[in-house]
Image 1 (cartoon, one colour):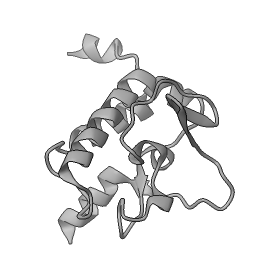
Image 2: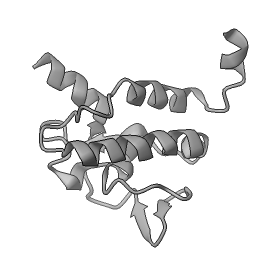
Image 3: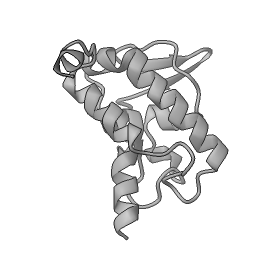
Image 4: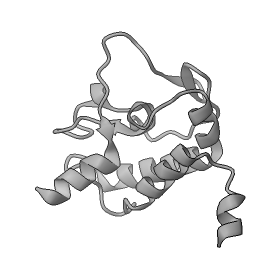
Length: 130
């Protein structure tokens, strides 16, 4: 087991994302206004993103809220607070310092005035406590 951990290509931050996201069930949307089919797709593309681009995301300075954030009270209902990976459920094809390409669409970060939410796993934990 220890040798498996040592060979993990992801840095600690991305391992934390993987573990936290992995606790969310793909069959149970964490936000009440999130369609189960849409959530299953978002869960899949986020999991793929972490495995494919998690190391690069950390190296380039992306944070969990920028990638997986949602509004602290309204979840995905407030799209203006959602992280790049939480919008649209499209599979990323790369990552750069200031954008994530999704084929012909691109998600941007660090746009002045754009609010930053909390990671969706924190939203789910708050909802369970309520």
